[in-house]
Image (cartoon, rainbow, N blue to C red):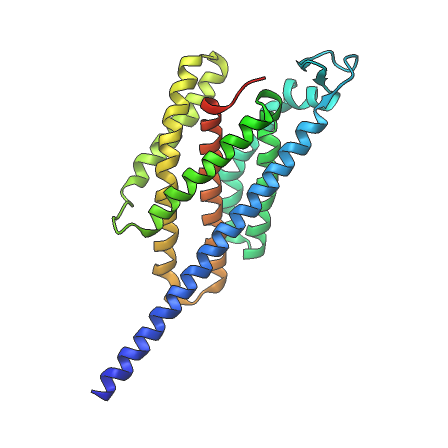
Amino acid sequence: MAQYQTVNTGAGVRTAEIDAGLRAHMNKVYGTMSIGMVITAMAAWAVAGLAVTSDPTVTGMAIREGEYLSSFGALLYTSPLKWVVMFAPLAFVFFGFGALMSKGSAAAVQLGFFAFAGLMGLSISSIFLVFTGFSIVQTFLITAIAFAGLSLWGYTTKKDISGWGSFLIMGVIGLIVASIVNIFLGSPAIMFAISALGVLIFAGLTAYDTQKIKTTYLAHAHAGDQEWLDKSAYSGALNLYLDFINLFMFLLQFLGNRE
């Protein structure tokens, strides 16, 4: 009996340690993601500021009343460089981050994530030239509320939603292909359909990725490989960051007021 109580107490302590470790792990995921969001917002705002001038003689490209594209803005948004800026984040996700995860240290993965967040800010900076500042902030707050609810559900639900993964990833690939095609078609109807599907797909991915981060930690917590767990936290932060950014961008198509 005494032996049973000892074993039972030891198991309880171990469970408590895993629970505490999970909380710390999720805090690291959300904290890293939040820092990435701040970096993206600051980079996008700073780049958009440099892209605008009040002097009409620089490029003569009007944005709104009294504001024109600067030389930097014309280079970034109207030259062939715009394609590099547009697709650089996608290339990093598919090629760069995977290499960091397999060969880099946890510190290198973290630095890579923050660099990616800055690159994403550069890529989406044009939203400050297209939409009003108020509608951007409003959409961001709505996205934050929706994201928090979806992520909380993914963390707390007892339902296994791992089966969603393959369908959601297929949906993301379809969105990427359709978006690239519509760059050349410029169809408002296709853009509306892409945005509607995008909101649904990334809402599902938010819950799916949150549960996956939790289950991955629980599956590997006993191994005690802190370096791997740290890299896993940064990878999870990237997944949730991408879910948030894409959810925000698709919602902005519906809620943003164009200038």
